[in-house]
Image (cartoon, rainbow, N blue to C red; front, side, top):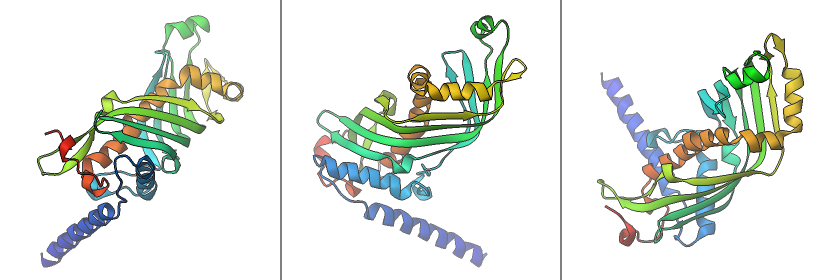
Length: 261
């Protein structure tokens, strides 16, 4: 019993040291110092990208483990990543990151090289597809991979200072209201095996065609995938950081005049 109690006490102590060490070593920025804010956020993602901070409930962001993630493309094809990983988030280059608490707005721009791979499943029960293909269905289940180079993302988001019940002021972001745009500046490449058109395996014919027309494919069909990634994974990390760490650990300004109750 004494041994178990000692282990629990030691574990709590180590978590406390870990949390304290993380927040105490964050660089502190003035609200108008956009370069410092950019470097701060980029550094946070790089430093904890692989490990996260369990005691602050901040998960790893690189790689992101994906399981049973389904995307519907134009209500024609459903693609599910049964199990896989997304890599590259921690190496994103941040060009801009800023807050304007008077207007309660934030702005962010970054460029990433992202690779997603794993086991996939593809299904299409769309009458349109069956009409176009003479009743033949498209399906697939196997290994897939997408690599996107120089994915440039621009975000505008509502953010405000808020004093919470613990007496601390936090930065609160309304993630459902984030607006973003994306542009692909590099090459996008696809790989998938075991794609079936009726009883015929068409992967070897289809994938080269997709790669040759990758810009058109991403501009026409990429939005649902980017939406899913942003809303469920990227925004979740930002939320975990801002919700867990009081602003005093990384903002030098007195936020009291800006703080909402």
